Every structure is written in C-alpha cells, then in structure tokens.
Image (cartoon, rainbow, N blue to C red; front, side, top):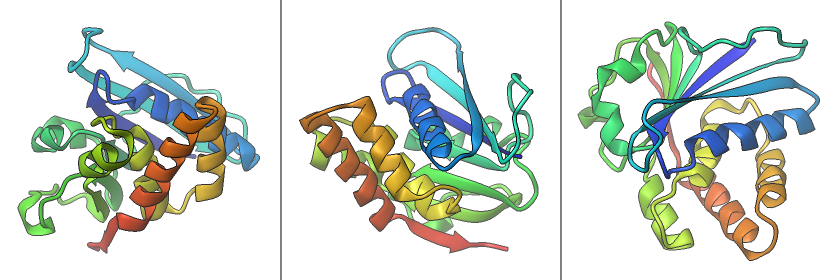
Length: 184
C-alpha cells in the first residue's frame, strides 16, 4: 500500500486533485480512497487530503501520518516543516516551486523530489492560480505510480468540454516541465 498526503490552500483544488487521482488509479484496476481534511472551510485556509492505493482492497479510512509521498500544492506551504512530518525515510516530495533545489531547505527524509512551477503553468493555461491539474502531472512525472493518460481521462470526466481540455493540458504541461531529482 502507498499513502499520499496533499497540502494546499482552500480554492487550489487540493481535495479535487485527490479525487481525480482516485479515479485514475481505479482506471488502472487499483484500489484507492481519498479522504479530505478541512480546518476552516474558506478560500486560502490550509487544506489536507489523504489518498491510499494498493492492488488489494483497502480497509483503512484514517488520516495518513507516515506518507510515502507528500504533494505540496502551494509554494508558501513548503516553508512549514509540519507538512513534512512523518514522511517516510526515502520518501517522495512533489512541490510547486520555481526556486532552485538548493533553496528549498528539504528534510533529510526526501529521497526523490519533483519540482514544478505550477502557479505559472496554471496562470498560462487556465488563467488562474488553481494548481491541482498541473500538480497531478507533476505527481505522475515524479512517482510513475499511475499513467498520465489515466489522469488525463479522469480530468476530462471531471470537467467535460473546454474546461476539461484546458485542465488536461495543464496536467500534461506539468508532467513535461517537472524537474525530478534523485537525492538518495
């Protein structure tokens, strides 16, 4: 079983990203579940979403305290060491940032890093700083736990028409522009 924790802010599509990813895992015949966690339910407030997937049925429905992967949707959040809490040794970090790797101040548990300027891509393609689709592409590029095509199909099911096409393009662009670093 793999466990993923998403950190973002209200309005960035953090919870929706976890739901879209569950659909993508399901397309690949994997068992998965997403659990949102809200503090204050308002735009800009911190939001966390949890996702588990496996080849076998899942029974756990709790928060994730020791994730295999942490996805940080908002560049400002990466400064908070709390979001890295519990990341497994040799963990994977997918972060929205335009900073060079040397300036990211990463915890020692990170073995693999995926870094993408998701806000810039989202502004270019969607006209807003909603980073969820771009970060899904970055997740695929960094982990290879799911195919990009499955994610794109799930995005298009979530948003039919032009909105789906633009979000699919944001995911594909995020996939292509993600810089992946093997740190250990």
